Image 1 (cartoon, helix red, strand yellow):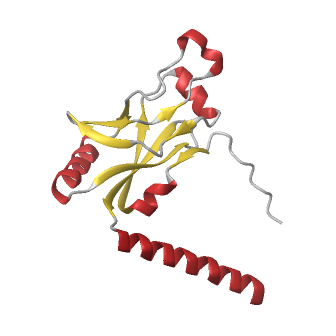
Image 2 (cartoon, rainbow, N blue to C red):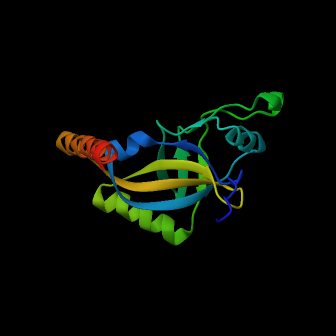
Length: 159
């Protein structure tokens, strides 16, 4: 019998924007680093973040996470950070240019999908290049999700 893998404490999901996959059709994903303060990293390790209302913008050749909330770290006291400040994202110039072109030409938008720590323990943000869904597409997604649940239930009960 193979030994069970221990859960890596560094490789941890901090926040996920589950609503984004419902509201948008995700075309492509990009992993970016973030420039954070020490109190922000400690707060993220506690899981105190929310990226549901946030978005990513390309300004002056740089990527910015706007309106992403990282709650203040309780033990930081006077050295704490601002909760909803703009945070710079780290990506290569080529990647940023590709994202900027897709946003400008194709009418796409950049949506943060997941905020997590990778296996090295660095905070990463998964960005989706997305196109907005209309109401009928959302209904179709709901129907598919309901059918998948029903199918799994049938397989479990009768399979």
